[in-house]
Image: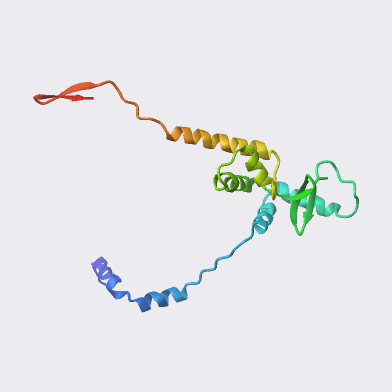
Length: 171
C-alpha cells in the first residue's frame, strides 16, 4: 500500500500559493542570448568542413602572395568570417546547413517574390554557389505543395443500399 501513501503526499493545486510559485520562479535562471546574423554565420562556418578548410587555406596564404589559386581568389577572411567578393561587394559565405533557412526567410517570410527578386534580396548580404538554382528549386517545391493542398473531393456514382426494411439512396 505504498502507492496510497505517495498519493496522500502529492501536492495539490490548493497547496500552491502565489508566494510559493514566485519563490520557485526566482530560483530558476533563464539566459537568453541574442545572436547576430554575422555571429550565426561565423559559428556555422566553423562547423562546416568546406568553409572551415577554405578559411584555413586563406589564413595560411595570408599576405605571402597576391597571386592566389583560382579556387579561392574571390574569397577573403575578415575577423574569422569567410566572405566572397561578388560584383565588387563582400558577401557572407553561407554554409550548406544555413542555406534553407536563408531562402525561407527571404522568400517565404519576405513576401513570396519571384525568382529574380528573391535572389536579389539574398545577394545583398549572402553568397553561396548555385544560389539561383537553389531558390528556383525551393519555389518549385512550394508550388507543388500548394497545388497538392487543393485536392478536391472525388464524388462517386450514386448508389443505393438496403438497411433492414428500407432502401437508402446516397446522392
